[in-house]
Length: 230
Length: 155
Image (cartoon, rainbow over all chains, first blue to last red; front, side, top):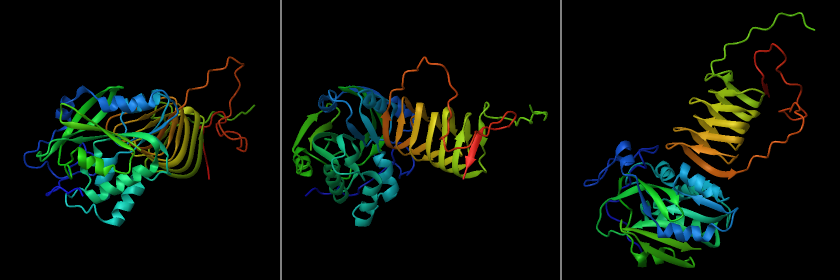
């Protein structure tokens, strides 16, 4: 079983609604201009793999959990797909509060959160861009979210998720991910945030144990890109 | 032929658009044959099929919306069909499904729902015909000559 990180910290998403506590010691909270300055483009094998699965078919239904950005909306819809947008971390803050000791194990709250964010019929989506949002969920909520994703994504479809691969880092940079090309991402740093738990390949395989396959790509930014086949 | 003097034209602070001010609440259906600016509260449906609908920063709309163009600066809850384009500006909040030909989302905007991009139908080169923007069950539009506004509100 995955162990929650002690001293779990949950910050805000880009200073948007929901707020959040100040950056953790040693962490560096970027303001808007600094965040904008950290914008960079980098290749993404995971994204390339994801698009390999969806670019030759139009009319698919894709879920983006990173909130709506112009680039992602344009990119997905230009391929002829229908895009669903959920600002997952913002809803996380709203459902569980900005307090870093918020109870993400409360069944009632978990149910409410799932109702707000992932209330879709079985097999509704043909692909999900999860980005890095799962890193900030404690194990109980995380398992509930993964279970729900398994339910709402059709079999054989793909999901793309990112996890930091640093085992000792207290806080990690979190980003807004914008699709630049089918194989590259524009990443805009939003600040520092402590993951709820740490992951390695083994723990991720266990987390997505119900899924058909899990494929890893390790990037030079110590971001583990994961393609999950439902 | 009417011998009445022309009606006084109201001041139009939004570039000619009819305006629902921020202290106004409308519950029901709105059909508009001119651009419409909503800075108040609307519940029901809003149709401005050939015109631009702007939801101002103070606007709260819980309605199904159909318009040629929609600009959101405030809060919308409901499905939106914008035949030409929709703009969701920074600080706007839109919860609902969107069908449009083009979408612009500013950073900082909140959107929850689905986006369907529908290609606009090619313009037909047929004889122009007055296109009623209201369902056939509707009475004649309220914009009789000289009337100050063409927005029709129906409970």
